Image 1: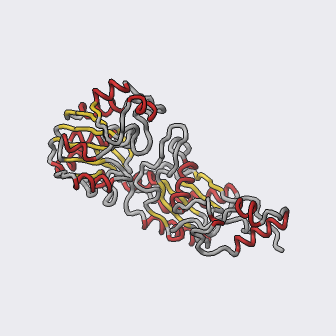
Image 2: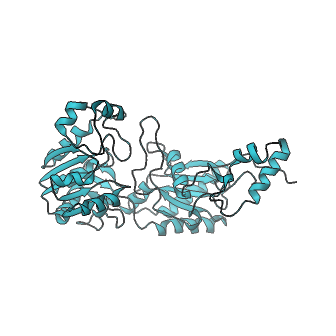
Image 3: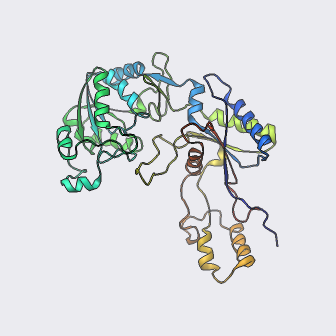
Length: 400
């Protein structure tokens, strides 16, 4: 009988790096930082370790930025610059405020339609309980700004203290456009005000476009269709446009990185050359998890990972140890129980989908799971660890 020597499972390490600037050799520096950390901290790199690189440093090195003037020019060229319906934006100074400035600079009037009681990622404008008390049905009722204020007053964000209704309205005015605000959850509602629409939702954008076109919109443009090509020398993203962008300055955004496949493969090859080990490499943005206090779903990027090496494709294929211990091996204990479960894991089917022994495991993409772990490890503040090394993720209870 083999003895079980391993005493740890998955370990995630934030790796400190220099501050990256446009034009830096990112693949070389990442490799050097990992090798230096390995030597100084006394851990070895192993096959199937995962290297996570935060999307922000990739975009920064690429110089993938756009100004509000460049956004405005793209908006004018694609919409005509008249009265625009801007629907379903998320409530975020970091994620949408600068985009809104650019959109407003590119048109005469913005009819801003906010979803309620919350935006797509869970930022609340009003609670469901207050909707119930007011007798409002968010699936059918369209509220004017005046009606919203009459019923619900001012509702600053729980964490930021910002009243996003006033904040967004003022941004539009400062950009030189008129503004009208309403609250609705059916995309078609905006067509009572204008037939030219920029829809700003992230994960529901394809449905929104379909419904707008079916209802007769003259033009429906998503955030993923703005800045898909350079505008006056700007950055761009052919797949996601302005989706996944972040505030860089008061007048510019950093776009989601593009052309990332070359980077992840180069880092993988450099580490293989240096260590003889085949590590997996991914670029990660927002993790996909929900905050139980604020009810905010973190994923404001279009995907968790825009690029990753081949070994990170697919979903986990895991047995539920709790189920085995409580049912199939309920009469065993100690070493006999450990060995029985270990043997079950060693002999598990290559695809456990639908089997009771896997029920309750997490049927999510590996990149979503590992990317969420990386995002939580690196944080979004001052930790200074835009690189995360995840070890042991593909190990299990039977691993020696």
